[in-house]
Amino acid sequence: MSKKILIVDDEPSIVAPLQFLMERNGYRVSVAGSGEEALEKIERDPPDLVLLDVMLPGLSGFDVCRMIRENRALAKTRIILVTALGRKINVAKGMALGADDYIVKPFGNRELVAKVKQLLDTPHETEE
Image 1 (cartoon, helix red, strand yellow):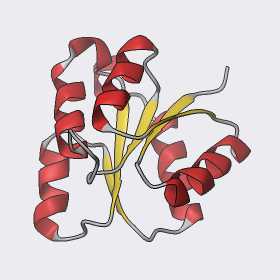
Image 2: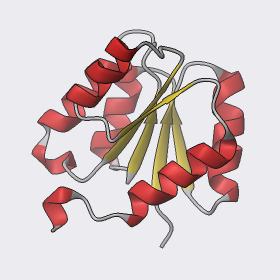
Image 3: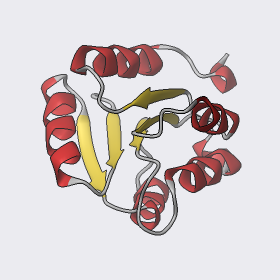
């Protein structure tokens, strides 16, 4: 069965190509446009991986990342923060909150697909 990815971004110009790219690579994709919508979708139907923007209306991606990591039932959910915030302090914050990876926009499609594949093919620490 193909892996599920949730794309969380409020910019249609980012969501549409990301969705196409992930579907073309064999993943099932759902989309959320806010942090609150993302949490609802994650709790209702947990994805294998979340591509999470940081700058969102309402709850930020940092907040969503932290809330996912605080929920034991979602411990295996992989998180890649995908954001324009590329300063070292932002990267450090995202990783400290539990993100599995951090990609700065603009990014290369090959780079993103490789990171998604790597995370989804690698057992999570809780599975070992």
